[in-house]
Length: 56
Image (cartoon, rainbow, N blue to C red; front, side, top):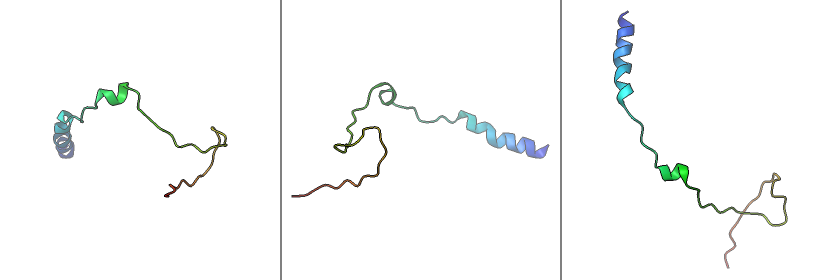
């Protein structure tokens, strides 16, 4: 019985802690995304590609 009371005393304060609020713009608005694409390949196929930026 002593452990149940101790456990309740330790857990009870945590119900009053709140998580951070989420910015509604992140959830409701569409994101501006840009995708890297491999030319002349199936757009829905699988593949492993190594992209490298060519410096001139």
